[in-house]
Image (cartoon, rainbow, N blue to C red; front, side, top):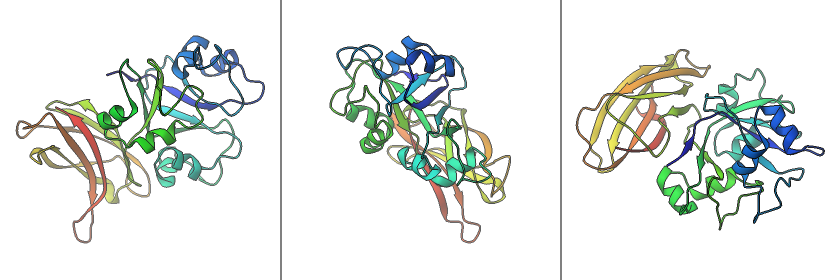
Length: 265
């Protein structure tokens, strides 16, 4: 399984753009962009792009996060909808002073990761592997020149939306990845008094890491960064499971903002 951990941009081609100019702008290369988007035969002539095409632009930066490059006419709400997340979350993790004001070429971090297609993959198998619905994957990749719902190509960089709630995004671990005792958990959350919780279960419902409390570095209304670990309290009884990250109501203790992430043991 190949998850691309280098920083990447999602860019919409404009009139006058070339792959060379796009590569120079984002610190990429023509070959890397061609491969990531399969702008090569038999899909299309090598390097052929048109205004409106949506490209994944890989870079050599090791930050591992994906940023969307705002185009004319975009709104935060529209961007959030494309990637199956929430306006509040996109606005909050990017610390936008006014979510109603964004401008072309502005770079917004979005809750996605990139999977490099392997020989023999199918979209339905990828959906099951990561626990992300096929409809969400399809929506995130709309407008990409090398994307076809019924045919995918090895080395194509597929955008996979992260599971989020309105107030929580988990950056680590990524869905479908193997976790171990002491696994690091990182993300951002808008939480009352900066308090949130996590619990790990296997697919049979056995609690592998019991509910534990952690703190973000800022409380609501800010989206603070949080970091914690998952000590195993017992051995998993199955090969897969779910990490739950959530808050609890100050009023009645009920679970709120639950984010479920499929994991492998």
